[in-house]
Length: 109
Image (cartoon, rainbow, N blue to C red; front, side, top):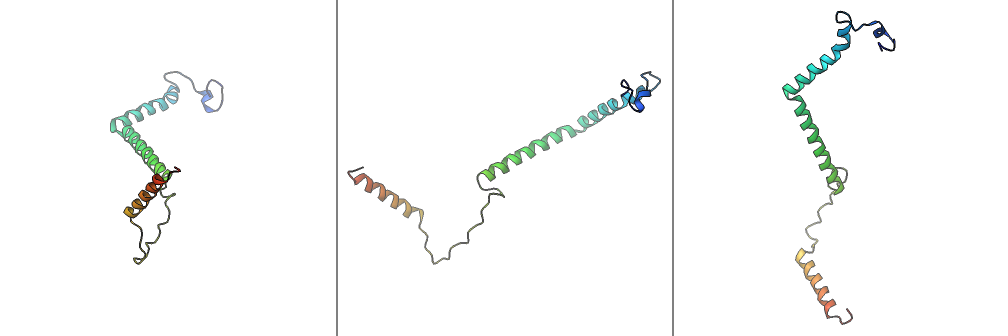
């Protein structure tokens, strides 16, 4: 703005005793901020927080893709009454073995 002559900075000069401090003060403030941020561990703490947030987002996205997340979670079905017999895993296995044996005995297969 000084070089183009726009606004109040148009009248500033670069003399050491003049308005140089107005140009330099934002850069000095930035260096002081970075030094304080690094010395207190704030920079590292923020980096770790960002990494943890990304990990949590990836985990939630994977859970949703599997249908286990909050968006993909299906309503649970009520448990059947105790009088209704459900087939056990062993019975289902025996039925599949019987079907396989039947196929092997069939000469057309």
